[in-house]
Every structure is written in C-alpha cells, then in structure tokens.
Image 1 (cartoon, rainbow, N blue to C red):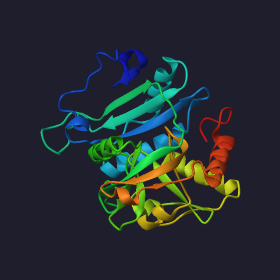
Image 2: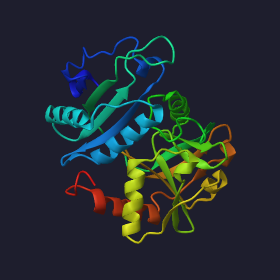
Image 3: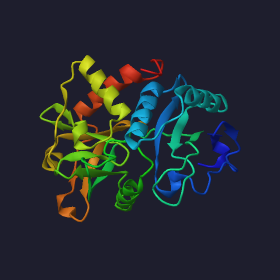
Image 4: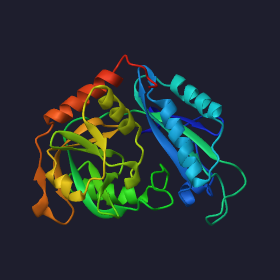
Length: 290
C-alpha cells in the first residue's frame, strides 16, 4: 500500500502518510503492547464498525490498556473516511504509547492511529496450510486482537512458501483453532461447525455475523470443539474474515507431511449456501453497521 493510496490520522489529526511517524519508544512497536481492528469500508460506510470498536475495547481491557473515549475514535474514523473515496480497508490501532525500555508502561497515554487504504476481498477457492505451531488457549492474550503478531507472521510466511493463502493452527488440546487472520468453518455430515471461543480463537466479527445469519436462515450451524482429525474428514472447509467474507477452501496442505494433503470440491453446496446467506444479510444495500 503506497502513501498515495493511504489516508492517515495519528494522535489528533490527519497526517501526510509519508511523514506520519511513531515515537521510537512506542510500546506498540517495542513490545507489541497494542490492539487493533481491521474494518471493511463499503459504499454504505464502515462495515460493522460498532462491533469492531466493541472488540477493540475488549482487547484493550484484556491488556489492561485504557483506550481513548469512543467519541474520539468515531471522530477519527469520520475524518479518514471523508478524506478518501470508494471501498477500502480501515485499520484502527491503539498502543500503550511511548514507554521505557522494558515491559512496564510509560505514563504518557496511548497512541491512536487510524489509517485507510485499498482492499480486495478474495472469495475465490483457496489453499490453506496446517502448520505445526499451536495457539495457547490458556494464555494471557488468548482471544485478544493485539499487535503481537509475530507468530502469525511466521505461520503465514510458511503458508505463502507452500503456495497457500492462510495458515491453520490447532490449540494445545489438539483441536482446530483458527487461521492467522481468519476463522475456520467445517462441514461435517451437512452440519456447519466452527470452533468455540474457548478454543482460543479470535471472536471474529464476520464469524459472529455469519452465525447469526445462519441461525436466522434455518441453517444448522454450531460452535463445537473440532479435533484436528476432523479437519481431514470434513466434506467442506471455508474461511471467514473481513478480507474474505466467506471463502471456500479447495486444498488443505500439511507442513512437513505432504502425504496427508487433500483436495476438496470447492465451493461445495453448503459453502455456497452459507455465502448466499451472508450476501443476503450483509451485501450491498444492507445496513452498514449490523
């Protein structure tokens, strides 16, 4: 994303993207002490903004980080959206702000950054890689959307090297957890199943909205633990996220175990039905903030 494609609001106002900088001691970059949200910008406005801000505040509370008043965040979003045209991606980041060399926070208050740029939502059938690293569902930041993303960077790099667009992680119990930036759904005997939040997965906004829409549409969908062995037995697999909506998985690869790779018929009929439910509930012309 080049500076020409980007709008940046930092600590109180719009900035030149080429010159917007953080303090060298900002804890968001020195120790990963921060939270963020990625919001889809549509012609109808920021999509599900209230839910994203709710989750931002929950993540901040989980870190013991006091976010700015929501009115400040809403005003910043309004400024950024007004400064650009067309669909795109909005990222809201709140960090612990400048601090000492170490894990203890400083007293200067948080850094607030809101940036927007282009976005392509990819709903075409994709390949995923099951990686050997796990999510710790009992960890202090389990289920929080923090800027501590190094584990995701490593896993996604492995997936990219294998020709996949996403890495899939188990938790320490050997159950399906999530992708690096997506939630995972499987179809087992025509039932749609996704791991519960107790698995350690992120409480995805797209995940929650889809579950609500499926329930309203009479589709059998459940939050249940999914042993990793069932990922290999699933009739269909799909990913959901802000940047994917509902994306079918056509191939599942396994890091270090190519003999267990498998192809899937994608998109399968249940995935197509789920994508249709999503579009009917949240497609163009629908309320932007469900």
